Length: 414
Image (cartoon, rainbow, N blue to C red; front, side):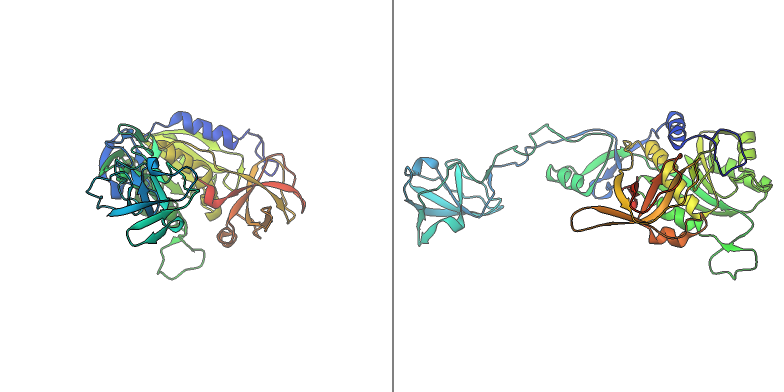
């Protein structure tokens, strides 16, 4: 694929091709560890978990009402039973029911063996110890059977699976107190460039504040990752090479921002070729064409562009799927939907573009998207205002207001 906006005649990789190359090159981390259930949210389960008990453990009531035996029912007629006790949640009825008797029961209360039905309390009339049942009373209702949710020995959670809050609740309901999960991926990141100034320092002419590290720190906030911010490395080839080589010995992944372009001070590609390997160099997306993927020893490397929006886009579209694969998590393509574009969009053929958009939905459930203003890869403000990408195919030559477009909501990205 050749970019119509570039002087380069060299074919660039499509996003799909780049992702396929990464997928083929990466192997998930192999280590596992046992963690307490309360600390397992967001971690990748490394082995299946089976239930040691039936869930529910006892037959219990799904309603507040009265438990009775269907054999005491009168055929399509009203009938009356004697109230002989109560089954509370956590305090079962201790007696034994005889024909003609019933008990008061609360939601979650154990249903006595002699009964097979529960009627809602709103459907009966109570006169002291006499409970009057209506003619339309139904049998075999409102009882949760033993093992109705999960049988003893049944599968609770398979693997690999990213454990959700609901998963933790399910596991806890079976009495599971710890689980075996994949070890977190060890990730180090740093920025490169002499122009970068730390926050809290005065900004000199020609300098910029280092925003990319703060962006990456947020993007890497994931329970599957153990993350280290290594600061800023100046545009010094030897220092950069020393930092990359030393860091590669202690981490699974290195991510850098800046130094991935073609300027005289952009050393990343040259260093990788001398001390590691480069799998690809330029990809046909915008923002984010200059991106390096490689390996130093056993450590994977991602060299992202320096422009802040390009950092976000390349991380979400390329790095995030790779990190999920490294963590052992199952891969799922980012969900997309169609929306009516209410803005005219400029685009030249040659690269797949991820333009910033603002997605809305009307009362009829129809989706509409507008451009989030300026699309330059250095303009972070429009990225902050946006809530989605408008995804434009490489051959697209712009869109008119009213056209249908593909969008990727940020909330649904990996």
